[in-house]
Length: 162
Length: 374
Image 1 (cartoon, rainbow over the protein chains, first blue to last red):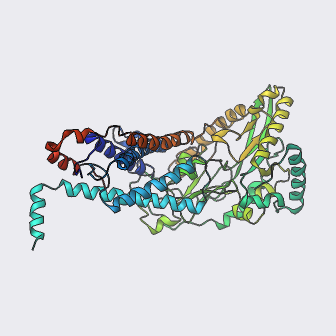
Image 2 (tube, rainbow over the protein chains, first blue to last red):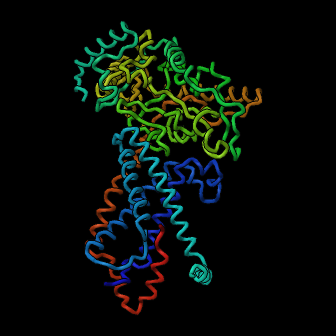
Image 3 (cartoon, each protein chain N blue to C red):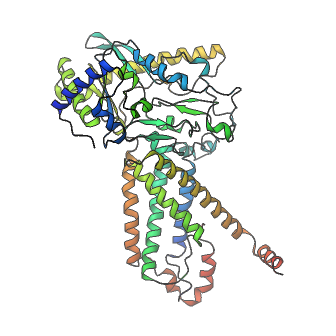
């Protein structure tokens, strides 16, 4: 078994991070907060107050993420084992990502003109919002943990040992 | 499923329906009552502006039916922080009926339009257009703005937080905000939300009971009719051809005399007028500009902050399909995973790390710690 299988190398990880970052940013911009909290007043961010522009950005980033995940699935169907350098590590992350993809697909269909019952739409909207918040907070938690200096991590590890 | 209605059948049925409405005053024709909840086709209203005399019976009926149900705000209304978000309080101005407000879902424009060397008097009932693919409903992040199978687009006041995104994305800026009411008061009223957005729901509670919208039922001139959209579109085209011919224009120019058929991708409110909407819109813009100037001066004199936006008076310009980009980008969403899967199965870009060999193993471990996001 090859434990160091990381196809695409760093660029694939960067693309994943880019897709997730853009999705979170453009998703947050779908809430009416960018203008209210002066974020759109920051240099270069005026576009974030335009819901249509950020919606298009959300679609573009979602297409990138879908392409990456499908590429990974395709490779996984051909390869066994190995460690990926990007993507969720555990069931929690994959569950959230799965929820986001499913509810996002429902919302995209609705935006394309397919009728979705109002109750179902409410569930889709709130699940998408909740899962996105949880995904963002989990990701930030993971990054914060990784950002700790190695020495601090080892000290914390040593302290936690009996 | 609603039966497909031929033009002749529609005209016959439409006349019968109109007669029925005139007699009953309230009941929706049986043929339409079922579609209100179950049809695969949107119900569409068609307004023949050549019939409207500007009596405002529709406005009275709408206000009588719904204004008493609308909530009054808590006092004092919580001020939003940061202060950029305006507090919008119409509770002291419920009598205003010459524009859209949270307490007035329908108003009538009274215009005099210069057309072909004569002055044409025109009255236009204005309210939500009930788009077929409504951006307000599509883009509401909380599912508060909803569209029904009956073609009605409405806002659930129990869910709406009053962020006004629906007003922002609406090409006509129809929904109007009342601060100090709604769910946001139970959350963080200073930081999240700012009230509830209100607009015409085409009498949805009545429609669900098989009754006609009040503005339609109370109109003495039968300006409006309601029917499945395909039938209304056919009727609108026939009327517009007739009006174009009477106006001395080529019948091929009939689209100039219709509004709502294709605007914003198609709406469930279609207007037909005896003169081109291009000229009506020019007159509207001129009139709105004068009114806005006066109202801002009045607000200043009364010590109120001037109201932002279009002052609750929608224009009638050409409107492209707001959700057109989203519809096109859905194709990208469908193609991306197919392309990705094909690349994966073909092992494209798959060998980068494998080719590095066992010597690169420590670097890969380090790499693997950097990429994951969740």
